[in-house]
Image (cartoon, rainbow, N blue to C red; front, side):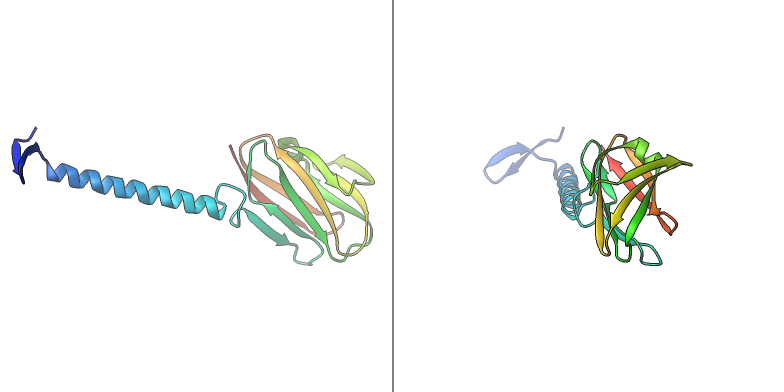
Length: 164
């Protein structure tokens, strides 16, 4: 405890060294809060430009829009664009991801599905520039690897981080 010091007309306990340290810690706290707020707005915790990504195969046959950062028990979408596909098209999903997330909706509905060899294939009758949307609800938290491709074509290996 420091001695009483006279400041203007009053005598008070004053420790300026301690006060300066406290002010520095407060400024660091405010900077940290601003950084968290800006990261949240940018999508670092899901639902923003940092969280959303578009990837395409080297051949350009498949373009996928998806959320790299998703939330547990919240809806996440995979929009697959097929610029050159026509007729029956098989979309292949790795079964690992299908076990870690609940498939809510597929638009348009597939004509049929097949499972085997670690993959599930959804067959659609598509026209060029068609879009197929898969809506999932992740069941687990953590990093997920998803392999999506066209039957008989190239595939993309995507990573998605599921936050609590």
